[in-house]
Each structure stands twice: as structure tokens, then as C-alpha cells.
Length: 228
Figure (cartoon, helix red, strand yellow):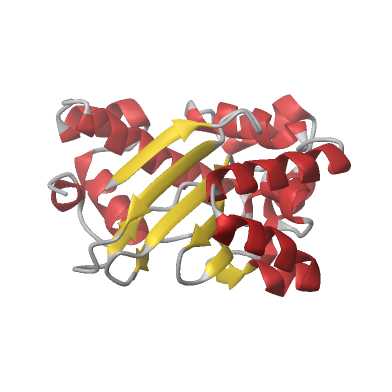
């Protein structure tokens, strides 16, 4: 079982819920996002941002509730640079210490989605909101704008842009652009666009280029992924 809805915490945020059947790992593709999670067995956790696919293993009946923060929003919510969380799944207590205990107890008592959203909303308010550069860069790179052009648009040199991107997204702009391009191509393919056309529309040199990139980032070729 999986369902999701938009969240009003910050633009692009999503609340999702699932219950594991415990049969097989779930392949989670990189998306530039960081998730604030609650597990019925593990409590409050933080996930991502991932550079490659993560295989999530859960026990039978384990319930998950997540608040998926859009690219660039996590540092304002969690209080740490995104590159400190890269490719990690960590208890929230590792980041916040004893202050994570109270929200963990509230989430376990019921309505974990509301607890996650309230927690993120309060932290964003205290931080003065998410850095607008995160949403701006993500929007431009998601449309296929080259990294150099995106840097010029926001008035940053290559080194400054790389430094800001590591803080906001967990990795540099080229990695983020690569991940967003893969997701754009897969979205087109899921909508019924043939792979060769999806590759061209997403900015790949050809279908073979798409296949190599998806295999590197997702661990499987696109044709196999799309069967799932």
C-alpha cells in the first residue's frame, strides 16, 4: 500500500504513507530530495539525498510515513548541510540529540504525518524559510538548462555554485542535473513516450546514453525499471 498527497509546508513537499509486505526490498530512485520519516518500528529518521538507488528493507506490516522535502529545503528544516546526509539513513536523534525525543513520542502516539508537517513548518519558520536558490536552481535544471547557463542566471561562479549546491542538495549541480534528467526521461516513458523519444526530449544523446545513465543511477536499465 502506498499513497501520497501534496503538503503545504513548502512548495513541492509531499506527504506519503506505506505499509510494507516485507517480501522484497523497495528500490528508491535518487530525486534530489531529503525525507523526514517515521517508522512504526524505528521511530523518526532522515533519508537521503541519494546519489544512486537505495534498496529499502522493511519488516512485514511496518508502517512508514514520510515528508519528502523538495531539493534545497532540507538544511533549513534539519539544521545541517545536505552533504552531511548524503547517502545516509540516520535516526533524527543523531542530528538533534535529546530534542528529537518529544516529536518522536508524539508521532508514535498517533497522526505521525501531522507531527512531521508541524515539525518542519516550525523549523522553517524559525530559519526564515528555505533558501530560494534551491527552488530556483532545481526549476531551471529540471527543464534541461545547462549548468553553466543556470549559474549565470543566478549570478554565481562555478566554485560558488558548487559550494552552494553541496550545502543545499548534498552534491554538485552536475549530479543534480543528471538525476533530474533521468527522472524526466522516466516520467516521459511512464506516460507512454517510446524510450528513444523520451531520451531525446530529456536531453540525452541517444537511447543508449539514457540506458547507461539509468543503469548507473538506478541500478537497472530503464526497460526493467518500467516493468515495476
